[in-house]
Image (cartoon, rainbow, N blue to C red; front, side):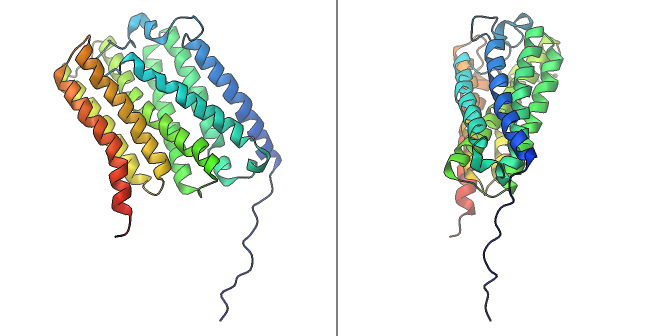
Length: 276
């Protein structure tokens, strides 16, 4: 009996909504990235680390990455710009992946710009609300990436690698942000002591990466970047705690272990998934 079911169905044609999404995401990305650069002090304004009386500075708590760690933003912004350009190409208008994540990636860029504006205004609890929303949006993007078919190599870099790096970094940044606000509000260590509290937080960062690695094990092109970005942030927490201020050997060791775990976990999960 023949098993030929005929040619595969062609993709649905692009709609007016697809064209609108392409234009809005491209223009919105340019505005959001420019706004974030200006708001962060890249062109001579007040750096975020100096806003809110220094509550978000690199020495505010024991779980803030050292200043060089924030250079990862240049890579993330480059990836977001690449995504905005690629999704605007004529052949991507009806692409299932771009339809699934286009608005969510734009939403993440807008939230990042909003976070900078809120931080510059000194609204510390507002920064927590915004960064948690940003983390949630990136998690939705991750879920949608895993659930849609893999695209062309350029699309994979623009979408999966970019979202992976973004999510990995924001996971660590969320922990640092929450800790900084709690410290500023004198809630701080929650009765655990600074060293134990810091060790718990960096362990949570590593566990988030493990959870992402397990969930997205079919897409190493997104889970490995998550681990690399989170590992980068955690490693710089370790470096900062050895050089200080403040110095903390316990947090430095815990952050080093967490950084290694974050980088290695996605690789282990991928290798374990392969048939023997």
